Length: 87
Image (cartoon, rainbow, N blue to C red; front, side, top):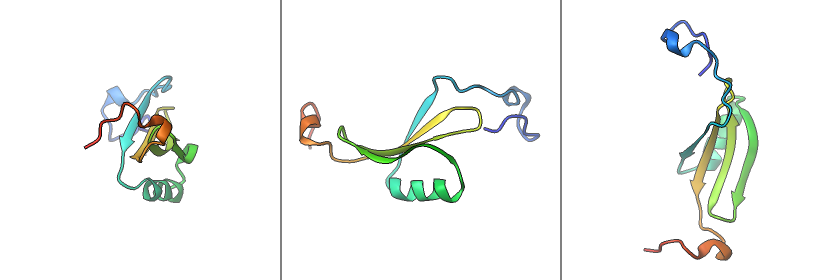
């Protein structure tokens, strides 16, 4: 999403400030995704961590300021179990 790339159509050349945009991408292995992000020197703005509500995730920021939350679903803590459907 780097602006002004010659291979992109003109509509994508102008930089977007990314204000307020967060995309979540669910992955099977957040550790692997985190390792790849570090290997490629991506801008990691939230380090890999577990959340009580059932997410293991980290967040990167692209050159336009858009955030990408890389998420692996994990078991929520007991406090957050209420309201989750079980199989």
